[in-house]
Image (tube, rainbow, N blue to C red):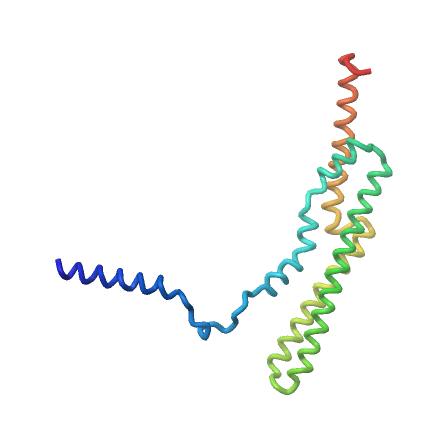
Length: 180
């Protein structure tokens, strides 16, 4: 019985010591701050994805039901295209700023590490490839092509459904004779 008592008392003592001394040695960590810059970078890169994943159908439905005008349909689709182009321009500006910072970093480490310089140059090439793809999508949006057509088609389909729903409601209300 003494053996069990000693064993259990020791674990109980170590548990109380651990809970009484929750201080962590800061020298164990390289950085004291949370990696917020990485999280913010991921959020910046997903701005376009968030826009493209947005369902514009309900907005189109409301516009079609309430306004039922071809001009409103065209204005809604132009608004989506302009929002798309604005986001693309913002992303391009952010990517160009990143390239500028990387080029300055190459200048700062000149002669220190050839390997690191090459890795940074590869990153710059990768960013330029992304910029080229995004610029092509921007050009395609002018011609009603490319990835912007997904939200535009959602809006258009919603607009048509809203207009049809309004027409069905109007016809049904007249056929019952309750509303004139």
